Length: 331
Image (cartoon, rainbow, N blue to C red):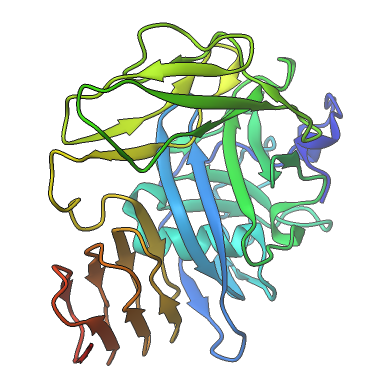
């Protein structure tokens, strides 16, 4: 399916990758148990620069119900109301799995009116007008395929951004690099990188960073000083997609709080989820999940979700968990 990234300034809005869906659509997500889940990062940002979701999301084949009232590509272009199968790990499958564990991404509105692929219309409360579309990037490069045909590989970075006017220039994407911990009251350096539509990277000058006294310099650097116990840093610039959020925990705390560093979402089937070394928030979702949270000393916040789940956790950590039927303590 052609997408807005192809830079076709549509006379035919159907060639755009998304549209507005007027009716609140309760999407139905199901998953096949055969395929192995793929873990990749996902970030969804609306037209007001609000981050709807950010974290690591497992994904696999799913099906989504389309909407007959989806008129986003123009009159008569609504979906059939039937379920549309998405048989491989794709950007749309990942989004659907994320919506099942994150209410901010639900409902997802899609149409199957066109024979070349599915059109993404709505993500949560964010809907694209007929003049706009959902812009999709993979590893900082624009995707030239439809979301249901954009394959997601392990470790990929997927970005969705709502553009309200396809006549506007494609915005740059900002990425922030900051340390995970910092001394309170002691300045430290952060860097901001700008990525063009084709993935070309350059220092992001003139970006505003949370806690920085001045915008980034020509090398994309800024100095930040924190007094808070945990601070969420973000880089913004009027002509760019805001950066990811970097949580920085100060050494004022003997231990950073559970779940502050990252979020990991599961699918609707049995997943194997291995926590990282940081303090993560794990939302395993439905299915018979196996969660391994033994790495590192940082405490995790774990919700195993529905199903008979197994959790392995390091003895002596301050991790918190719920809905985990079997818990094994490991030295």
